[in-house]
Length: 566
Image 1: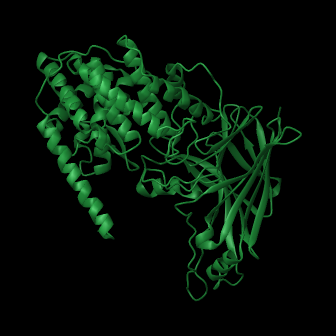
Image 2: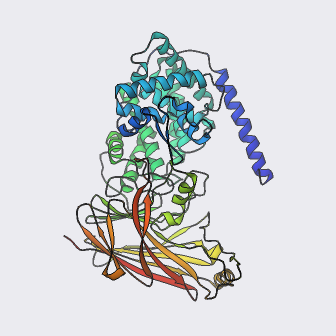
Image 3: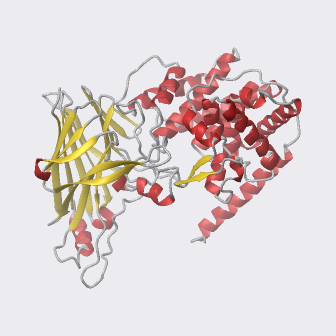
């Protein structure tokens, strides 16, 4: 139920926009119809052949549940699941089936598209939003050869009738797509229709102009985007690269605004790649495959292989074979999936091509509970407040252990020391309002990349912060707050307690051994999981947990990770 007049107004507004959008989709069903595809980009490395096989076999991962339904099209699988069915309307499955390329996958693709035409093609339902229509027409044109192959003339006519319907609809409604990736999907779909369908070529100039303006408004000077989601940045870059490829294949000169945006974004993507070539996983972004990222960067045409020290609020420190990516930016104040992630000051560390510490992954395709867990601070390699237990009288302190929605990060120092060691120190006040605490993290990576040291400190910075902490701990016998610094170990790393429980040894796939030690807190090695978009189930792994307390308004641990080999 709405909690305010403002929220009620927004719901009514969305309702009116939805009805208006459906009315337009219905009204533009008929009109000029394309008869052929005149040009299309050469799309590579988008889908997963393994996922294509899973889908064609009737295996669907929905909210963490594996549903087997080999005899029904995707539209009849878990029909009441609005989230899954909405996602399916973007035709993500077509990328995977096409990547597999088997006869069975091609047949399934044609069957599912034919069923979609029957159930949703007339524009009378919620499948017709600008972002979904944009995502669909992009894939319909990219994979037209599959959908048109081994079909009748009637099937081919239905295909062109549908893509023309999409083109007319997007011309009218692209600007109503939400800002960010959804609007880029709608706009690129609009551009695609004008590029690929001769009957709509007069729409190309206004479509490209709108896309160029969106690039200027949404992509900053360093190639970053407001959501700070690395995967979304990659998705937008991919769409822009496809447009440039489509223009090139049509013997057209790509717009300068698109080329400039690509030139800004490509170094940002390189900066956010971990040692294994995948993307750092922050703010809802999944890692993406190394092959896909490499393909997009190669197709972008950017010659430089340079990276940046800081982009989109992430600090990058590379020394020898070690690479550290740290979230040192403000928490996005936008309504986007993943924007609520509590990853301020979290980091990911890799050695050569092997991740050592990372996050739990995003859990996008898993249950709502696991998805939310992957967004909390406990899901990242960072220190965080632990929930209070009730006291002996059963009273629970009025303490918020959640990070504030408007958390700001301040970089206190970022410098190269005299011996070549890189030092980064940053702080945030996300716990100040609820618990009166400021969190400061200091990291040092030696010149040879073989030693990473860190300090995690929680403290009351002001007198009024002490009053907040006193109120929060009033009914606790020892007036303290428990902190846990968690270091999520990559699933391919073998971790064991060492030195009688005083250290943890980490053996990487290349047999390199690293030793983790800490002082000021108690070390334990606990079970954890990594949520991978490439697997149907979470991967079992471990996490190092160092617990300590805030006593007398301050608590601190220091820790060290040292490479023994080489």
